[in-house]
Length: 142
Image 1: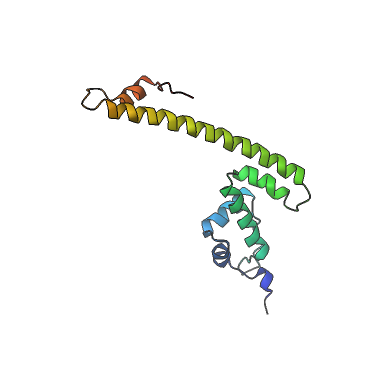
Image 2: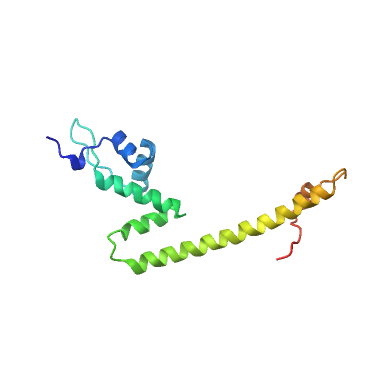
């Protein structure tokens, strides 16, 4: 009987990991996932460890980590490098906070422009379009 630990074809592996076959191949090209040797005349086989690795990658992506950052995390996945992992996570947290601040600024600017549009109905020039054409952002209260 074939060893159940390494018995998944690439299609079954992709299904078990919740991704498509092209994602598996992409991760292999990026070095995030090893490509098992192909037995002569046979089919490459994957196991539960491979499924767990893809799930790790997908979980890290959902937290906003790039594939390069995930590669760094994978080098630490034995769990003994908590300080390094924490440092990577703190850096990512700073990036996310910066993005949130940018999104809040964009929201405030767009809110002001939408309000300007609503208050100028019937006017020849739309304040939103005029502002974008000038390359300006309206000032808003912080």
